Length: 234
Image: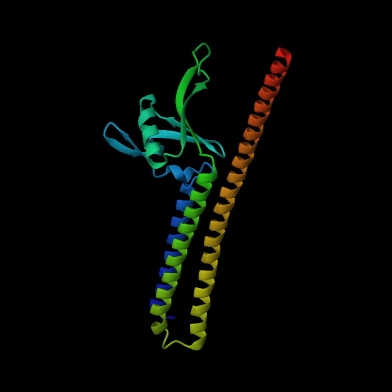
């Protein structure tokens, strides 16, 4: 097998990997749940120095929908908060304090400030935005992968002109298998993200329905009380 043919195949493999990694990264940054990767792009500016969030703070996942971000220095709470807001303005931020047990008996408890990050709810508007964006990113990735396959096929075809039919079949089978595997990965990522959005949307709908029921019950209660008052006054 020619080295040039193997090289073209390897290049296609690398392109597929790159496209899928980008799609995965974009999906992680369309936050429904608390994803650590969503904080990777955050930069914090302290005293003229720009650093990653990891260097400025400790990050802990409180649950599926919340992060605790604890700045290494109390003075850096505001820069850390601003850095996060620049990348993810949709994250809800709340300043909290965490009590630390004293190291020595008799010492006072320390209170350490931290930022509680809560993922935004998937309401009607956000549900539509997320689904549209997920589909757009998927279609873009698919188009790039199809273009790469077409280009690789066009470049490999003349290189195989002097190869045996058996070798030609092997190359075709390898490309078909690679494309099928990567397409399956892409489709699974797309479906998984859509399911994640739908689950969060159902959760919001359930909570919203409960709020509306409670509101109507409260209004009915006020109405009954007013009716009783009017009856007593007559």
